[in-house]
Length: 492
Image (cartoon, rainbow, N blue to C red):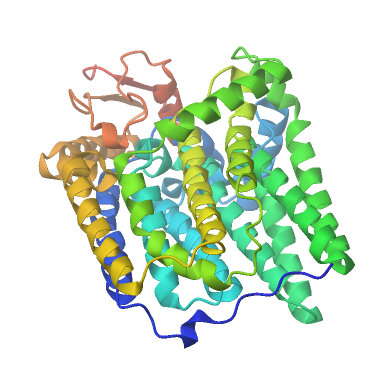
């Protein structure tokens, strides 16, 4: 059976009257909404785990020792003593302040940038190459998905403003999207050997990187690669070896993670579930996520994108024959992400894990929406262009009202409020004073004042003010800067 061919170019047809305004306004809105989100990054600072994982790089740079040797040695130490996610540990070690003081401000730029660029690249391949749509079809889809990812994520503190949490989860989810994009391009490479070899090498590198990241994205990526291999066996059998090689390479990297002795050490700090119970709880959590992650803003954006997806489904090289298969498969993949943390810790996981589950939830919702619209399109011609234009205008107006009502709960709304009320500026100033003490070589003991009475939730994962010198945040700062003691109390 031969592979399905991409659809005829929609770009050669006259664009619907509503498409350009939707693309321009949507793209501008998505970009403008990033301004307060990124501006808040100039007020954030490293703490806790950032310092713990940043020590090797900082110490190597201060002493003139080999940076690479220090990083790889730490990966080895953690593999035996705490966690097997080898590339995940490496990413956390690259904490910006280990290389440049105040470099930590780059955190939301890196994480949000990688997330929306990788999603945009995958969408571009799907829309413009597979479906034959112009960039005017791609832009509103990218704008909608990017807006929802950044603005409606459950916990931006852990996934945008904290390097340690975001580097292990947000970053590797973005790399998984890039891997899926490279696989899509590999499927389109046809009989061009050089192009196929290049793409296969890119996929191999990304597969190794993702295999050593977090277990949530790791399990999902393994399932997607398995599905890709099956698809190649069905539609492109002569090239099954390349797909099998990628799957085997990924499985080997993931096995290295699973085999780490450190995993048992870390798992010992929690109460995990049996495999059967973990699967059952994962399905229950997936069911809860279907409604729990669906906010009015999410539904309004998906409603606004219906005309775009409807038009794209016209010539899609997909039979759309199984309308129940798409939502069921999406639900199973969504639920599977919950299994690792239920198995190891007996719970769904912290905000940074819930965020990457949410990111996939959005991708799956958009994919299922497209598939169901394609199935409907094969059976019903649909309304006329004027009716679609009118409905698009109404959907845009509805979205504007919902955004106005929900603005304080968006990431941009939270960031704008924290910037306006001065809480971020106050926190920044006091943390800057504290870091000045940390970096003073003549100050062996650092006794700092509390950062503030009410710490801004937007950028806080846990409190960094503790009077006990043996509290984790104080130990982390003490080890990073080589101090004798660090504590929150008046100077002695």
